[in-house]
Image 1 (cartoon, protein in one colour):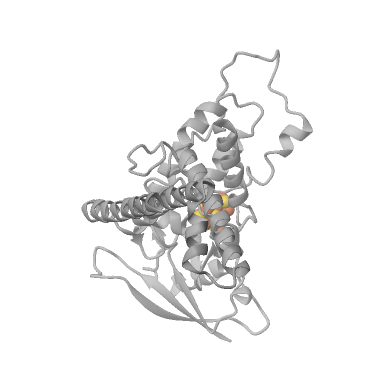
Image 2 (cartoon, helix red, strand yellow):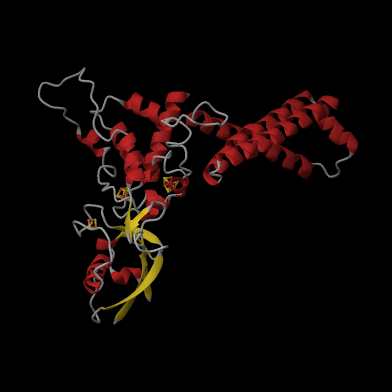
Length: 115
Length: 236
Ligand code: SF4
Ligand code: SF4
Ligand code: FES
């Protein structure tokens, strides 16, 4: 068994489940948003504001950005461990990507909070 | 007909770096031969050309080569199948070259060793004479036990190229599944414990290069999928 890992999940199985579960959430969110834009002829500030004032929508949005965090964290870790062999450089890149992902999460939290 | 070859040559004792050397072989019109036969004839002309072979009939797995970009066994690949003006022969990709077409398979065997390729039985339910299998139990080993460890699959797998020290690779995983489904083996849980990390099995992304090249027509991707299912069933 390989134990030196810096991914999100506790094991490969855990990673596998997280990456698929988050993909499902993201698929639903994308389909919902597409549906919204197709069925709404004109997206005015009121309609947009109304959509995000709904508690369910706020939770759905936060869930989606957390799914982005999980999905990208694991995915980027996999790509980096394949292609970046220098462990210092890999650590740095992983750090930068993860920080960026947390910035996304924080930005979404604050935005949804402010609606 | 003159068949042209371009063959990877590298002797670390004298060559600064690998190079491709051209050869020509007279193949009588209307006749055919295996790539290995051609190599043996070429070696009569140039005794320094090195390659491995043993059974020369697709059983031992020692002459895996990269033939015009695709891994396969030289002894069961006819020249007429390759259909190329120039047949390009290189060692299997991704592992260190010992000399010419001979590669160092240590990493491949280390991964194979990790999956404990032998029956483990705790002896708690000893049969009076021997461990019998039903026809159905035996059938589960079909498509798994035939592997000859030629390494064509693992050296065609990008995941194995990038992490040959951590990812077991298709050949080893095919064998891992062979022991996981064997009704006589009692170490299923321990075996799965050893495979559940983020590399050993889960580096397989289903690219299926392994299935594409296996000279025995086996399907490591399917076996890997079954291992993943076993791991998931245990986890949820
Ligand atoms: S699975 Fe096929 S290609 Fe891979 S080592 Fe076994 S026989 Fe060779
Ligand atoms: S299916 Fe998996 S094991 Fe086979 S070549 Fe692709 S990544 Fe490698
Ligand atoms: S020489 Fe044995 S498999 Fe080709």
